[in-house]
Length: 181
Image (cartoon, rainbow, N blue to C red):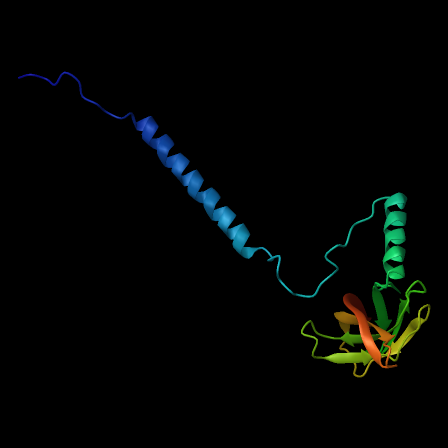
């Protein structure tokens, strides 16, 4: 009997390397797909903090951001001075700091909502001239004890050539309202 001149065998080590590499590629693709599908979409219209919000790590950066905000206000953009947290012991009467910046050109009014869908209006102000604002507000209905993120619509109003008040600019901010028991 003759034995074949050469028998080709694939070494077991090379099969293991191919299997490990294929598994690694599949795992990497699964991770990328998960991250792409679970991340927040760019065109998501959910309300949150300003998309151009920046963390200021030094005094020069903070001053530059403040100067830019003043330039924006001078151009008719909305400038607001406020403290992010407001406090109440009864859920209706809140101590807060919300001011229409003196650098603004226009009066504004505030509408505060208890929900992101903007269906539960809890406060509507009268017109607030530049440089004026609130240190206390009373809500239309009480919030339960605890912390609540509320949605504050700022609407600037101008008077057109016919003498009618019209909306000039509008933007949305969030604040945290805290009710203690």
